[in-house]
Image (cartoon, rainbow, N blue to C red; front, side, top):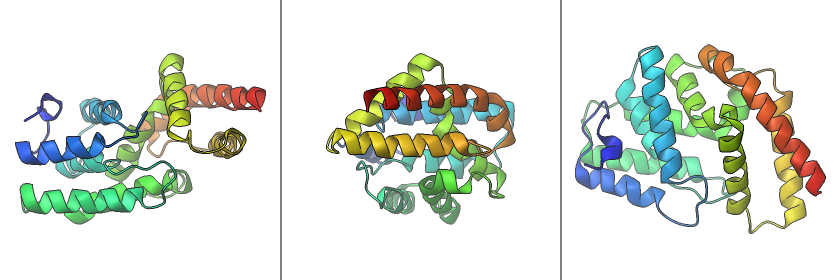
Length: 207
């Protein structure tokens, strides 16, 4: 089994691991790639060290597959990723894995901003924050992420990208909460707002 899954809370057979890696390796990707997968799995383990997950296997598998299918701007990335997660789980993973919970968590990543104020189950809230932890990363890591997103949207006319990206980031900044869990909010909110403000200003200068 590839070393990136060595600390998984469930046994992921080699064929299953290979299928996950192959999906994440499908180009073109600049941010939503294997480095992002490794980062969210590292966040999973860091979060577990702060407080146990209630369904660690399901959260881990949801993170393994949440961006496995990714086409910049496509509306069905999450649904297709959830379908892949379910198919691989049925073929390779323990029968008692709660596949419905995995599917719900992956689909929730499509609604990050719409659900930040909702009452979520604890695992889903923390899982979503693992995915968005990059927003509260040190400035150099956030700026690399921001640049990589622009690369993924290189097919969009520059003015349209700046307008859409700027509106998205401004909406994030206007939200009373960016992160879903209390832990994520306390740890990452201030840094995320600083990063997002800088990115919005950069877009305005480039306009």
